[in-house]
Image 1 (cartoon, rainbow, N blue to C red):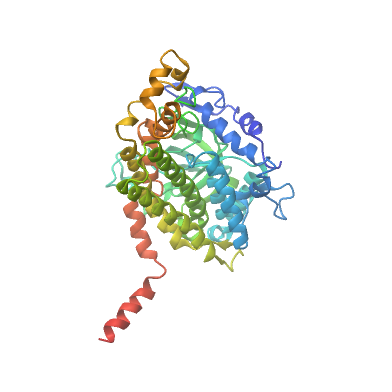
Image 2: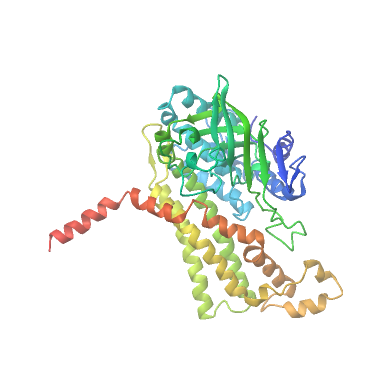
Length: 483
């Protein structure tokens, strides 16, 4: 199979998977009302791969994949490959306004990164290295949609997994058989799990200690695996007219908890097991961070750019864009956008080829800077929306259809902007409210704040690993010695 269409993606979801919403089991997730909008948006991304104007960017043709694969699966060999991957990420992100953090390209590139470092998995055994490589080829060849589950339930954070009052709640291996591993327990915040094809599981953060070996497993299973149950949060999708909810009516990603009950994971889908030292090294040594952060920062750039554009249009609609305080606020937004944009290009320009596998990796420090700044910048731009929109954000028509009703003239007069009609201004306000006033908007702010884990841990890690630290230490030491 080559790259899939949207219809092929949707057809694959009717596979008997066990998904629960509101205490009731869902039938076909592709047509379930609370999931349908997100599924259609994802299907649109698959269709983009067949659009003549996008196909050359979104589809790659490595020699070992005769039918072509989605660009995110491609293993970059040079800076030009990284540029094409960036352009592909941007196309997907622009199609969803940057609102879908689990668009297919994110996990695609993560899996590619893991497979590119087969030597890392070979430290455990050649069988595990062969398993990750074969799984990558299977997923890429079939253009499957993956998600992942990393986090344990929030129990007693002062205790290790095996020290919990009920140590069987976190996901762990309970038996090892000739056919594979038997797993029981729970993982949480598996975004897009109800309508993904495959689930990649690995524990995060990678800070395992002796005694937690049973929990140290990296594997993948289809979403319709027997014994795998998906429990969904309440939907934040507004199912009304798109004009009234321009974003939440299309792009609400479902977050879910996945429950494993006597789930068999065949050996050819087990990539790491029982070795806590190796698991603790996986995040860094697999170099997945470089390739996934490349995609992450591109999506964030598009998302911030979308909000920046809206900020400007709102200020123009209110006739305040040239006011000094507003111009300063818009300039601050532009600075933040440009910083994130620069992290991606700087990482590409300083990319190097790993002699061990021939893969061209973007330079990590600027990408890490983007990951650390995203949780700060996105909430700041949302706050700017509230500042510019002011009280007008809460005084909107119930629906945009009212502009075709008997009260249309009154609405038009009451909502008229500086240089645009009342209806046009109301549409901008509806869009801003979806970002800063709805459950959808609140979820996105929280999502970006926690996207790369707890920010304090992220920046502490950046300090520990900062590649230029010795350069600056030498600089200050030389200066002090010369006094």
